[in-house]
Length: 461
Image (cartoon, rainbow, N blue to C red):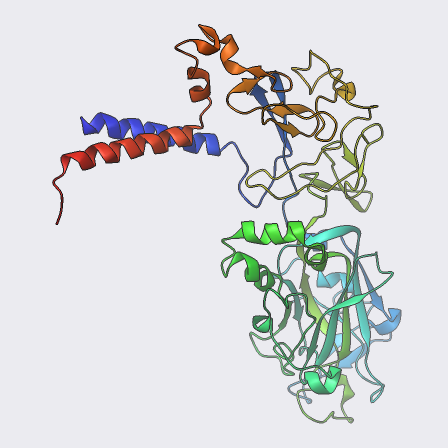
């Protein structure tokens, strides 16, 4: 008798899994809306959504300051940092094979020989060799992975990574880098491992990435995004619900991972020694072969795609929103104040759609298809002026989500009225039972089976 029961349980579990697959994977939010059937007919179910993460260096504009700091004009010969007598590297802006312009920081990696941007040498020593490299998107970006700068020469002995949230009008530091943090920036040296949930927003200086010589595996400088995520989501980022919950409720945390521009300030090149060799200043310069910036367009959880058109990134807005970041309601859809979407509750989040303009609540008896004609004038429910009845919940002012025992436009009708025999009939409980979630039925069935088997077993001492 147990074998058919096992098959039944397996079938029920498969149905539960199939039902759960309707929703997008947690953390992706790649669907903005879907059509669902309700007691009132076919309608839209809106969800929070966002574009997939991608390589953002494909869409940036890079500027180097001062403008004449890139090598090659006039042509110049360089020596190797670790060997001052090896001076066979040339830079000539007029020769394509010997030029090192800024765009080579973002070209295809893996070429042989390696391509890279390079600065002029430190020929004006002891005057500081200062270079600013600015990456601009003309769009708000949300970072999703570590920022990685790969140096072809030695890593700088002093450097600052900065961010802007207002398209370069103002700047604030992300992280300081130095061989000696106390001497360079009067800051104690720390690493990202020293941070906690309470100090995640602290700006630190690290000595981890500032060795002078070119070691085989020591060419990169990082700004650790994922290690900061891990303070909430766990070391393997398995608990994204916790992270998204924090991002949902803490604006400063969201802003920390949000940028419009990045700036790398190179303050002192690698020297490889305690003293600078003033007789061979062509050993000292900056050279960057690659910069990685992984992120997504910020669309305020109102779009699942972002397009690059006319040198500009723009969200393809849903939920009746508009603007580069979907940051306002469309015309005639300002029935309530615009709000960003929410990651919560799992798994679909909350869309916070913009609703049509109207003067007070408008009740229509024929709104079974709110996604079609006349929807622009329909405002079915309002949590302040016209509440759904009998425990119903108003969803985006478009429909009432009723409890199991009630139905109707405002959940005003007992569901049993439409059953055989009415609310007092012998079948009056069937409707409520049929609306019980499948997962609940499965748990009940499992529980009754375990109790039944337990009754056949002898008591254990």
